[in-house]
Image (cartoon, rainbow, N blue to C red; front, side, top):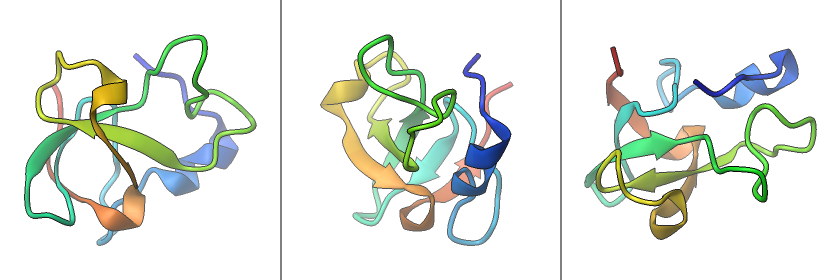
Amino acid sequence: MTEVLPQNERFLRDAVGARITDGACVLDPDNEVGYVRLDLGPVCRGPESAYWDGWFHVTRTRAEHPLRGKVLNGPRVQVIGQTA
């Protein structure tokens, strides 16, 4: 599970205010369903970093490598499902 610094929680809301979590199922601006990937590993900064600016990857599957997905932020997606 990806840790989120309190100052970064403001970035993790979708266009209508729903909470975005790692693995959440979202609808992107192209009306395609994808999955939020917040945990990008040691090289890319995620919401556990003080330098994170709110951008994350959305991949076609939860197993796909994050860097193969689209780069989006909260206002550009709509959450349609959460992970268990």
